[in-house]
Image 1 (cartoon, rainbow, N blue to C red):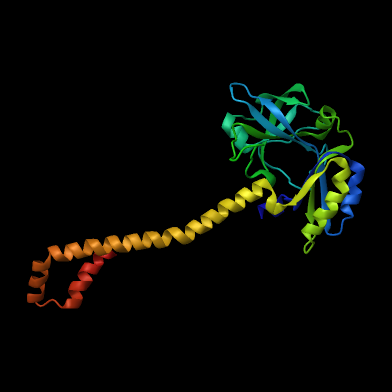
Image 2 (image 1 turned 90 degrees about the vertical axis):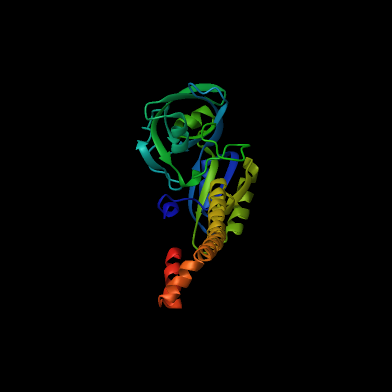
Length: 271
């Protein structure tokens, strides 16, 4: 439901620089329902009070309308206002790790130029349930953050006016993902396109699936082990209890108690 509500894409690709006029040709690929282009770049971050090196991925937001895919769920604050180049939204994990709230400031090195940024919102994204930085093998919210900011500001900083560096696709039901990826790679090849990939290979989704698989395996493996250990301990305890109370059991039988009533008495310890 979360994926569908916030329009998590099915296919992803990156390019060095591609013109926005290419969007219509991408949309014509059979099986494509929706196309969303944006600017996405890795940057160095300068966080007050944090001495270790930190990196982030800056991602553009449309100036007016909401993104058609990979939409943000705002946890705190608001989206950046049009024309406010310094306003940004950051992911919740990054904000929590550094104690950021709306109004906090930090700096980022955008294409060689240091820019001071102001946080106006904290958000979640279906695309980044797990935020894994470049070269990292585990998510580290202190050293890697996601930053969403004005498309116009990012385009100006990276000389990408009327261009994009990342594209996401939503597919029609029943569409061939492999066929769409092949055609998309062919279109993006001349623009420095890196191999497109499907949702199953998207980093965050792959991490989430891996964790769910682990939990599923644990739910099948651990309960039988606990039950076997519990049965062994109960058997051991009752055996020793019966052995210690043999005289009392004999006395109870002499007083007329049946075997069934004596067994029921000791079975109550199990319950």
